[in-house]
Length: 280
Image (tube, rainbow, N blue to C red):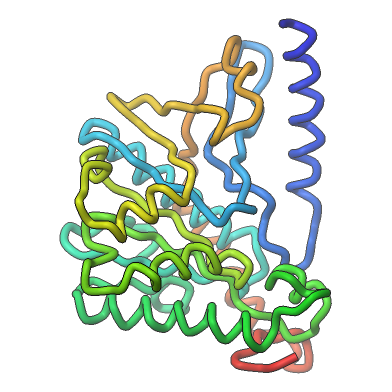
């Protein structure tokens, strides 16, 4: 087992190096969920983004840590990716979450839909973005928006959709639309993190079940996160490491994001811009 752990550790280092390479306007290989720690080392724990996202389910006691993880993850992506290349969209209403993301509404990096009407409107815009990108931009040598953005000087914005499963999707939306959405989203540059209490798994809403069945699930109970093979390939490292969920200095990340926004405004207008509705 020691030998297998060493192999996993070496493979993890290779994965991390791959993740942290500077790939212009490519969506990151993995979502940073936190760190594996023991007395001698700290290893970042990433879960792959190639399957389009994940579900985060938790109990009441774990909700603060779950919120902290999601907000830290979003702010880290927004601060490290090129300014304007990522927008966070949130489908939720009720108690306000993610206070550190709220100021980013002023620079159009964060949008929250908080009523039934605005949630439906935002979903339809995202749905139309996915459909139009598949029809107009993606082809045999550009199978994804990430591939497109490596080849084109005119870039498409990525979207990270935070979806409160208590409020969305509703039964009024046809099942086929939700199925098409989750199956087509990531290739079109739209990634999904759905979240909610454990009880949502018992929901009779077929649309909710489509999302739960499509994405891998990270669970938390009594303040502890459960890391399995679906989330993290190298679970043998958990034998001598403890997982600590991502919890970053949000004020510092916000400063970096706003600083990047200011730098962007001073750039030469001939430099790369994001395109909208532009065919290949």
